[in-house]
Length: 295
Image (cartoon, rainbow, N blue to C red; front, side, top):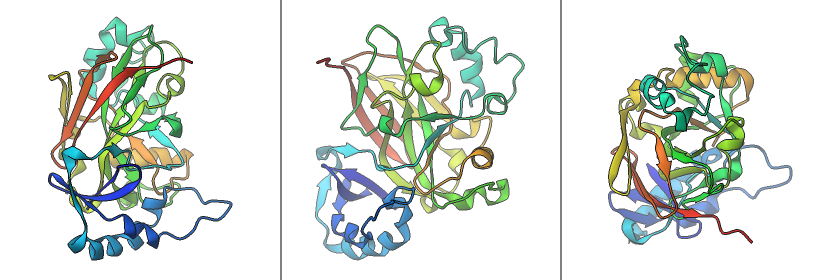
């Protein structure tokens, strides 16, 4: 099942180039009461929503995908976790670029087989979430902002100290993620967490739809020029290891997002650019880059 959030908080079932409006299924969500438990409501109650969505599908209104506005399918993760330098060619190629490195990466990564083991994961602010409709707002126009396409893993059930053997049972599904990055020497959590610097979409794809998340091909274009293109199997630390690693430190909740790292080919974007990302099993989205309008 592919679910999207469209046209200002409508719930859509994405099938090919059509979006079926199944918003009434959200009536199956229980009312929230203070204190609200951690987790994204869509994912927390996915088992309850799926039968309601399936019942609505035969009579649901269809919209052309090209005619709707897409927002992030995940709205309330308790945290967004990300793996640094998790593709070997990204480490070997991109971190040799002084514009990328900024004195942070290249020397520190020499002789390091698995940067995650050295640096751990970093956290991104949940307020950085955006969808294709919102796009990216360049927060520091005098600094370089880069695109980084990543496979985003969405956690499906609560867990702590999850073993590698049990890790995939905790996955609800996947989406594409853009880990937008301001280059510089500040901590990653600062440079990667401005508003709109975590773009998710076009849809949340349930785990049963993807036989092998390590056999996907992700691509990214800027203004029609392809810059990133890689199989997810090239990641150094795979998804079960990332879940095991993350859950040593954090309790993982439904809707939490793990960005699994970016392949080689990262580069800058400027206001006015159009970014397109694609993965056959997840979908395609386009979004614009704009300058921040200061008050």
